[in-house]
Image 1 (tube, protein in one colour):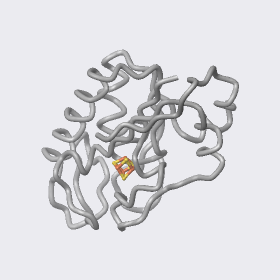
Image 2 (tube, helix red, strand yellow):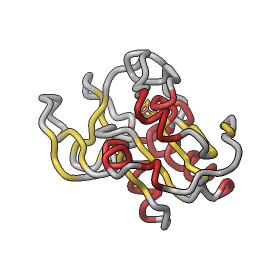
Image 3 (spheres, protein in one colour):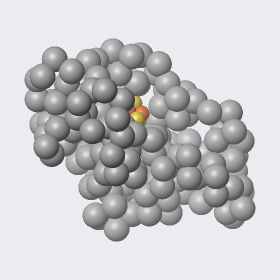
Image 4 (cartoon, protein in one colour):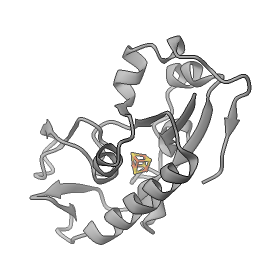
Length: 157
Ligand code: SF4
């Protein structure tokens, strides 16, 4: 399968704190699939490290109470352009991110409380007809049961 995936899940240090979300089990499940890593926040021009952000009343705001909505939405648009060009069969995204969260996000109070919802890229990709999956569901659903390509390949975005 061709899978567009949050770049931090493949070990890219693009998280707000300069780290990544690499997961050995996920990497094993992805073996044999064609991977397209994207980080919407980097595509939007946000730096690493950066102040953490959450969605507050539909607007992405960082913990210093500054709107970063424009950059987050620009990054989501750019990530969508890559998806439209590469036409992945599946999009696997890091959980709970204000960009990539596919089914729940933080509630905008910076208190660690989660609510049902999607990050700005996850929502854009879902609304554009892509099959979007939270990484925790991808692991739980045993991605290995999906048909792999003959050759693993990682595109550069
Ligand atoms: S925007 Fe997505 S890919 Fe980038 S660090 Fe956050 S969760 Fe990972």
